Length: 469
Image 1 (cartoon, helix red, strand yellow):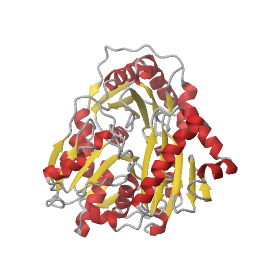
Image 2: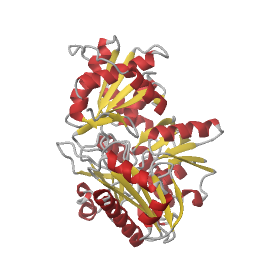
Image 3: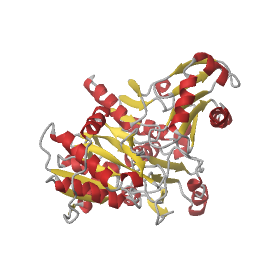
């Protein structure tokens, strides 16, 4: 049985299940689906740095070429850079990436000429899925990688003045993210002193929501060793940001999105239920719209907000990936809308805020009236186990018994998974990952110690319940 399925953002599964025939089949299905609505003449392709990505990209190119389309190879680059470049050409695109999930997995992220595909588009692609078209591997795609990378950098040129960050010393954790060069070049262009480190030859999965992962262990030491004001990075395809402040503390993705939305003057914010529950209480925005987890849901929410009259609509996820729904004029930059997750946009917004207020990143975050929020996950946790746990907790009596050790349930929400608010002042939220066999646990509390305790309890109790239940 194939592991391939659509998750929160794109098709994902084991790389061995995707390379070859499957990649050609899904590419053909995507293009057949688009051809029902109009004329398609070209397909743009990009990829991350996984060992399997080049072969899968070649399969996608072969399928498109065999269907008579021009294939434009944009090389190894951030997913938002590919989307921007293809959309500017009025063409669809496919990013070969597994994003933040383990290196033995991979995926396809599909973009129409107008932007990310929707959940309805996913169903349409699956309806077209059939036999693979014979691939023409002798056809050479057009190499447009330099133009795609340059266009992405130019998008943000002038967003901050060239000396805005002249007093900042910023580390770039390169690992195997496709955004490492763009991060260094853009922030150097804003005046920062850049120190790059941590580049690896083999792909390393970096989950920007799992701060306890071993891959992050050296970062606090690098802050001290290099005298840094911050460390920035991104996940594999650079649509999810990472930020550590000068005190060696990670800044959560939803905090990054919140600060960036403020900097860009948003009146409407669209964000999943996993983002900090105190965002509404800040009263920073005229409207806050909550969605399920996944960029297709955020995009749909943004489109609805724009239709309802939103002037400046910004979306962000708990992972920090930020989407711009409205064109902006800021500094010397005229910034077009780009409704797909981007790692660099929120980082620019946060540093822009800190520079404008002449404060550190830590001071900027400390001034926010937010609750302490933490998250982690149980890995190698089968989807069936997640489903059994969540199905059980959907029964009020079972949920009351499960959470009794922590307190009584005041209220709950089931927008995506199960979110429970308890009378001990904590919130515990379980949801199954849409991309990997993992159970995610998100918690909130008034203090760091309470949040740490709630997270430990949430993970341990879920593990024990599914082991012995």
